[in-house]
Length: 638
Image (cartoon, rainbow, N blue to C red; front, top):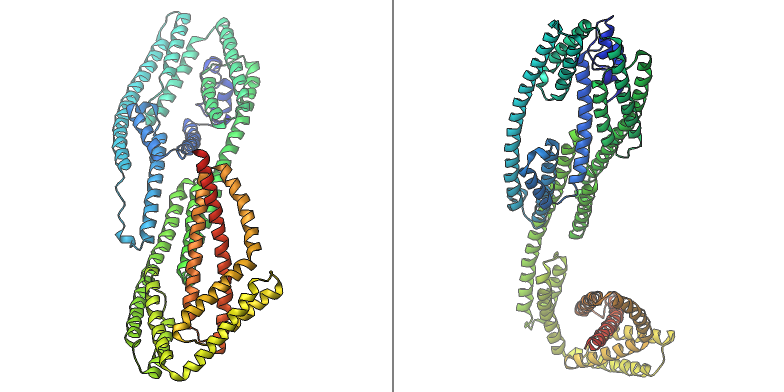
């Protein structure tokens, strides 16, 4: 409470010295408030109460945000046992945070539903047992609070009648001719009773206060206290106000500004309820109390302003996130990878949103609705894109199935020239068709390439003019194999590496060989290349394996689980490398070695295959090392 609020009390009649000495508010405050009304006091106190309530709500919310749904439900059940121990603000805050968590879970489920291809309008949240339990206990709490409010209203009305009775007794004291000292003691008792009765109807408080003050003033007009009583009151009141000043001054060191501010309000009430001190000390004691109050009020105001700044900063952060999601350029999301990458970005923004505190109360719900609508729009468009992409892949699947059936129907054709031209045309058409689902692509491709290979092999075998060329090609490839064998006994060098790659390029340039010899001669060639590759790349494999052994040793120190996870990762990588190598080998069937472009592509594919084989060897060596380590650990355990 500020110093102004202590002055917002009814004006006394000028010249009534006894009233100014004993009126409940400090006399110096009464004099300073000659132009202040009770209505203004109530208005200003209401503003302070609203500020207090805002701070209390912020503190309660900060505490509630740390709780889970289960913990909030348990706390609400405890409140239901005795609602008098919880304020309305606390109940409302628990309710808001429970539904914040509940709505967040619904959003996660909704997002998963949309990512799975569902429509927004078809989404139905799964019933939440905790929400049902929360609604039930919240109903109990509301019912009990309604009863309490009704009882409180009765209590306020009852207290109003009690205070009216006190005013009537004051009237009787004023009109009584009895001993003034006895009347004074009765007057003090009535004052005490008046202050003990607190809750009264708010709409009657102003008039009741005015009436009470009127008769207090009249009593002191009549009483004409003697000096002995007056000096005793002054001394006692000075002791009380000095104590209140000391207590207010100590509050400046309190770390909890909100708690200190609440305590100060109680001190102000007590100061106001305390009578006057000697006239020459009034300004001094009031100035001291006012200075302590002003210091704490400034700290409180700074704290409140800081809270407002933090909320505004949170609003700014949330607004930026909204703008990012709303500003997504959907025209640039043209593939699954692009959509998946953008999805991860949106999810990251949603997680970041959760770490940001509340925005100002009037805008918090509004900015959340804006963010939720932007996210809903994103996942709706993603769902639409994936549905359309799925439809396109189904169309592609049907087209490729038709081509597979077509080439399979042509593979036994003896019309060599016409069929070969048709198959080349079909192969080009195959390449122009978009992707299909992975679970179908491999099997379709194998059927397609097998049918094409079969026809061209039959065509080659049936073409007599080609046999002499194929035999010549066979001789050239055998010569290459012999040269490769000689390199097996030589040490690794740049010159030998270049020689190997030269022979491999020469092999790729050689045309078809007789069909019966094709697999055999190719197996000899690949076996030799594999051996040479292993031999010439042994140092590289060993070097990588050595580094890996050191890494595995560190993993074993942290526990066996880390080693097993590493092995699983290596096995998946090894399988992926094998599949990729197999794909390159299949692709060789489409290339014509007699063309210039075919020669360059064959050379490039060979290099890629050689690199893959090196990686496969490294992966195998790593897996073998881990398996040996696991076996050793098992033996130790035995």
